[in-house]
Image 1 (cartoon, rainbow, N blue to C red):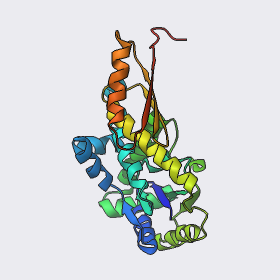
Image 2: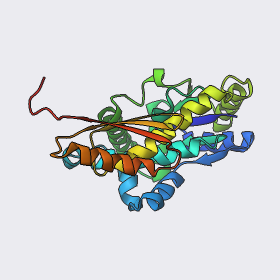
Image 3: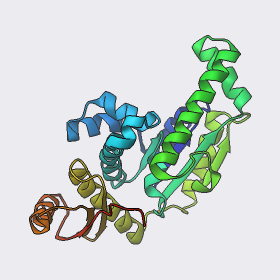
Image 4: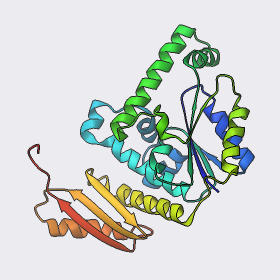
Length: 269
């Protein structure tokens, strides 16, 4: 059993590869569906979530932390899904959340820019010049998005266990390679990696419950025990601490809560 995340550039056949891998392994294949689940769970319009996971942050986002809030919701829903195991997820963001999970196979599907331009032009019925403009804008937007939110570049090969180019390989060829790696047992779920994932999922659920009120928040979880660090200059810190503890205690899986308030400095250190 494993989790497979597939990151891909536009027109690199990533969607086809993901669907073929899921079919051959008997796994569930998930992409945009996670937005529907998250939208329903947190009562957020799906369009806003779709923009949060795709669009580069606007100037307003940088001040309002809107994108960070939406991504906290998506992270919580996605990690809960990953806990079910036997999942193929294709799309932006999935591999960010499971970098330290031993049974998560992180794959990047790419293709030469010229080949992607040819595919874009054919699919969209535009000139190759226009297709090139569209692809470059999309690639730039994705890089800025990941750098702003997570400080990493989605094209960095060190983020992945496997990088496959589909210039000459078919989607079926790429899927065969991924399935072969999974079947070797290198990414089997262990008790340790499963617990680590459950801890991350619990921390994400707590963060999602609090992020609308406290954008500067850090959450750590270990076997039901949750530690929360919030930056705040509250006039009545004991009241705020109790409020945070009560919210966190209601989250599924939480057995114990510790809250730490850190004063926000008015000056740069």
